[in-house]
Length: 636
Image (cartoon, rainbow, N blue to C red; front, side, top):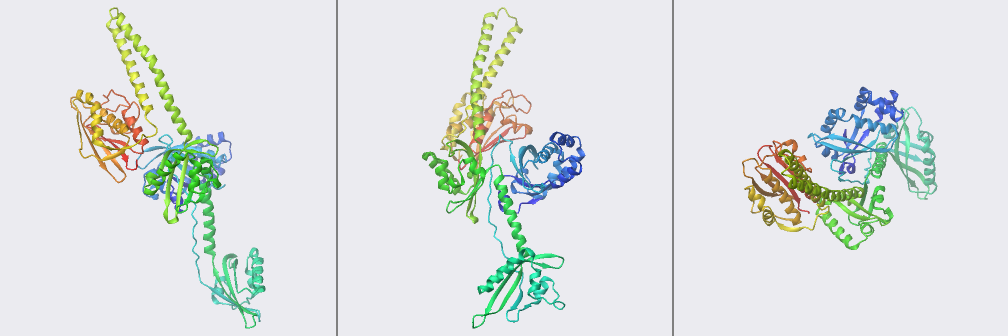
């Protein structure tokens, strides 16, 4: 296993590796498994653990890119190789069998859902997109997509075909001279040595020279040379193959200069032969590599385009790019044409253009990632996409990648609408249940014993709790998918407004809320920031330790890319194993399991913050207090 040699594949922001399944195929052919029907093939592998292990041992991952190392949270290819060998056979048998099944069926493109464990022992759900590049399975490209967070299109994808510059290597000259008057040819010692000819034992002239030229090249060489002589061309040059001992051939570049006498007649030709075999081999490898890269870029499951930075002209555009945007390559020839066609509404076009160009001008890679962009196809269809750009200044190129998230966007909208409607419709029967139970208690309380009354109380309490959960769900569904308009805010004023809203809760719990008086100014929607602080402070106060008044302190630090806020409390703390799930809906997290609240405050915070490109996390020793952190990017 090693890194891709090509800088483009190496720089792609999504994990990509190249696998060789050819030895596995050979083994399965030998075992009589390859070529079986899908059911029999799968059954054979599932019932033969030793065969599956043997196949796993023959899997050869040839190349990986830098994004693979980041995905696995590993610094070097060597460490990844060892980590993969150690963990692959243990955890990935099921998905591996599925991969082999798809290959056995002869599929050229397919995907498999799997899981991976990073070096830090974090499990991630992934989608493996396979593209078979060669029939013998020696080259299979695999793109890895982290789908742990509801199909987050990260990414960051990127690619481009760069014209590789070839440096011609001169390996020294082997001189020759052809006398037209005597028809004799003289060869230098270097020439004899180059072609393994014994000058002392054999005559070597024009006929012998022709005989050594590869039969497929011979007629072209003769035709070229004759044409040069007949037209009295001053120079002649030709590339062809010449035989050397052991029935091998080398590529040569032969150059000659025709010498004329005073009367303008040809008298001799002087030239030199250069061995260009290495150059030719490198060129052929380069051609194959470029074809391979072009095939990869053309078949990866996302749109990729490249344009020149100075002129905006398009250099490369794959089929998925045109498919997603719904315009042909001929209709997207440069950046300005792209904006005019894809964003027909002038006001929206200028708004998007201004933001994208400003983000690109910043040079900040995090700012050059956009989600929720509405585009218009040539047919007038509206689509939602996410896009990522990165530049290669030395090559004067801007790389653009795009993923169609229209279906995901629609699904999320439908889900939010369903949650709102379903929650709203559930309110009425709950009110009816609670109301009739209250009437029952009021009318028959003197006829019912204490146990019956307690049953009614339990039912009413349950109904009220269900109503509270539904209201919470409604609140969560209303959290805006698109961030509101941002203003420059003084954080101390935002905190004071939040404390005023929470004054009853603070007083009832005798809570002490303090904050750094020199907190920075931040650009963010005020209502959303108040909502974040309100939920974090409410969480800190409600989850206090028994007999201890809550103390909460708010602080912030400014980093190069963001402002990171901290809300620190002296409450019960959060066990380490619950520090990720605490941001999910309806989670309690007390260290002793005593917390009764199962609200959605932290889930709302997470949704708001991540929608605006920030992050939220918590640290705690699980016993004495917690620190909640969240970040707001300067680029918001």
